[in-house]
Amino acid sequence: MGKGAPTLTEIKLVEVGLRDGLQNEDKILSTSVKKKAAEMLIRAGLKELEVTSFVHPRWVPQLSDARELAESLPQEEEVCYRALIPNRKGLERALDTPVQEFAVFLSASETHNRKNINKSIEETFPVLEEVTDLAASRGKRVRGYVSTVFGCPYEGEVPLENTAAICERLFEMGVYEISLGDTIGVATPREVKEKLKALTGWFSADRLAGHFHDTRGTALVNAYVCLEQGVTTLDCAFGGLGGCPYAPGASGNAATEDLVYMLEGMGVRTGVNLEALCEVSRMIQTELDKPLPSKVLQSEIAVAEKKKGENAD
Amino acid sequence: MGKGAPTLTEIKLVEVGLRDGLQNEDKILSTSVKKKAAEMLIRAGLKELEVTSFVHPRWVPQLSDARELAESLPQEEEVCYRALIPNRKGLERALDTPVQEFAVFLSASETHNRKNINKSIEETFPVLEEVTDLAASRGKRVRGYVSTVFGCPYEGEVPLENTAAICERLFEMGVYEISLGDTIGVATPREVKEKLKALTGWFSADRLAGHFHDTRGTALVNAYVCLEQGVTTLDCAFGGLGGCPYAPGASGNAATEDLVYMLEGMGVRTGVNLEALCEVSRMIQTELDKPLPSKVLQSEIAVAEKKKGENAD
Image 1 (cartoon, rainbow over the protein chains, first blue to last red):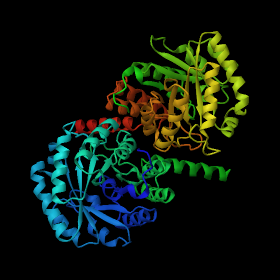
Image 2: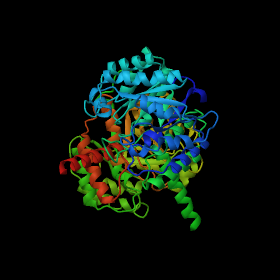
Image 3: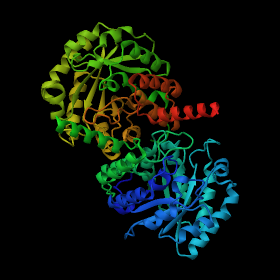
């Protein structure tokens, strides 16, 4: 961190649990449970929610209720819903819903992009441009996700130049913010620091976001390094939701609870009520019938169980 | 981190899994299992092992085989075994064994010290001095642990002045290194940074160590902040072993695997073989019959399971 604590307005938490968190979960949750989770997340103080994805239902069965969920969400001032959009067709479906913002995605490594999107990186750009053009014509903002910035499950290390070139193209298309993804959770703090130092030299830090997975326990320290480098938009998922298809059973996204705990402890007011946030995670944990990875969540649960035991004595 | 990566000799990992990691586990492991774990930890490359505690067996049943374990350990060059010592009587029992080094402990907060040691902080010093004097007369080194440096389960915030005054007394007694404990895992990076900045102004950074618990997910980021402040001795437990009596079921010590993964990714050669380290944790996980918290361990296991599944197809 620099000299002063970043103020509330300088830190932006993007809650991606309902999309990135759930998309690899086998057990399909009902639309009403997802809607309830969104309502509870808003009550806990989160303002930016990525709620679903308008990819083909066959690709991600968990999110096949995208339209139904989007239409059921409460319209609240100061709350922004976002959906992931693979192509123009997806955006057309999404534009009819109350979702306010969209996100496009591609990978910084060729092999991962091809396996994920079935196109080369170069072939992907026109597809994304159709989305950003149509969104712009409707006055809608588009965010960009770049995957495998810190490592690819097929290629290993990914040159920074790939990411830089992709960011340049995305910004040219009118994307307002780019989320840099450690898709498989391999990043370590020195690499994050070095890559962000270079990227924030080329692009404005307030148009970049950090998106870390905790597969190897480094999500929080990488988020901390982001803040030190002036990148103050962080993606996170309540409960630490989010399986990894390359390591099924391993940890998910940076847990919103853990991030909020760290930030508040650093004097950053996040506006998020931790207790209310843990309630959402407890509900989804019960629905998925397995403990979620957030340490703050599990320690809250352990303390509550202990108190219950003591009261019962 | 400063400009260059710390070199191998600058980072010291103190493996406390067999002592701090196991002491709150209900299921008692056999001496032969602990011995095997110690041997495997050494094979994995760890050099400093805190293996047991010579407290009264009634206090910590898991470690009641202290003498038996200590006498069974293989004597290896460059490997140092350490035991926790509560008082002169404990040291007398330990001095007959091949354990080379000892550690004394107290808390930075009065209430925690009283609940843990049944004495005020001031009353504790003479007890520790008896230990350091006797150890010195036998040419043995003594480490110091200060608990609750970053927060107390009874008193909340703990003034830095408490810790500073205790460190001064411990160094006067001849303790060669002091491990600063986040006993209940509440520390966040800014506090760690500020406290270490002050403490390294008063004491030499190479005589201080960071001892973090991952109860709220911040152990690794706090360890990272230690390195940034020049404190390069870090305590850790294989598998992330170590329950917390104040939140049973919550996470334990900073996981050695996760720390090694982060450090190696930062260009620091730790000398530890991650695969061999995960093997020890897998063995103890099986013995304790529950998953251990290390994320690197769980992701290794997940990847191995996936490969096994693919080969079976």
